[in-house]
Image 1 (tube, helix red, strand yellow):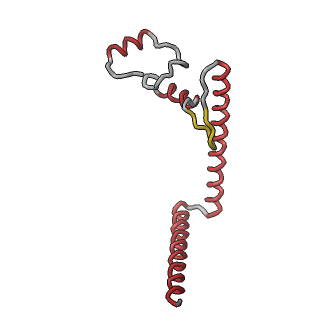
Image 2 (cartoon, rainbow, N blue to C red):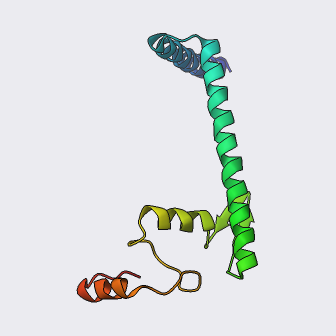
Length: 130
């Protein structure tokens, strides 16, 4: 029984020591940055609010894009599990078209046919452009 109690206190002391060292390192980091704990908390809360605002904006844009696609008669398969998971995410499609239109995979049902210049490029370049 005494050995069991000693093992319990050794484990408890080890965990407490690890937590104290973590707290010490955290405050050393704050001191290096030249900010107080209160300033860190304010900055962290500001980051969380900005992240939440971006997420809300992204969801609003996604819903608008889905509604627009439905009005145009395009497929808008979405599966909602906590957040949107979609095989045809309109924001991802929009981003890929803006960033790299020549390398973006095209959905033939939602994009216009390729131009004659693109057809020539496909014939000259053996790389698959699909």
